[in-house]
Length: 352
Image (cartoon, rainbow, N blue to C red):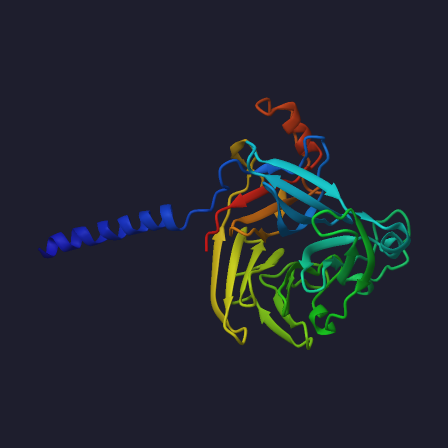
């Protein structure tokens, strides 16, 4: 009997390990029909996506706000009744006399995360400051500290049919949350509820912009501007590149450096109750065997009214130079999409 136990115990542990690694610790895969290129049937496409927010439905379409870190805001729609799902995008233009005039002297209009504030009926965007060292035209503002922050935009019509952004202003966010920002390093994650802002710093970097192994999450009470500061060092979160609040005490986010989605559950005093993380796959549309994770970073997250999780990728134009000479298995359109650095849109079942 003792001999049997000695033999069976390691075998049992091996079986448990195999079951866990194959069924419980697997990367989450996109749902059927995804991913898709962020390009409409007319050929219009997003560029350098960095923020995503679900705003509702219009018939069979799900509508999102999308922010690009080249100074563009879009409203995009996804229709899952088509196969593959149909993507469409509409640029929300800046009103010339107000918004366009306000932004014209920025070194770079570096939009990061985006939310729709149902309390004020305004769009909020986080902007990373930029010193403008690489700009051809000398900007008026060359100190990143001047332009970084959260900006509020009004719009014509309603959030689901507007086409013009107006009356921009910078919100009075507490200065202490900007302690660790840097040139081109600020809040890539921003979540919102009626009561709180959740601000996720991309990463804590040194004076030479070298990354560290963690970052900070700031929770700002909207009525008082009181701030709760949380280091991610013990949470296993290396970077915050997108946030989505689901009520005051549940926060989803993306960690580009660790290639994970995370979910934080808070106690009522915002101490940490639970942290869950899950790795995700980033296949190329129509090619599940080709990964996009060497070409782009995940810098956005949104949840719809059914609980599905959405992300999109920001192609790294300065690093990604596709060599397509030997890729005869790709169509001409796919090759064109890669060369143009068209982002990819992902939908996952909620792993938490």
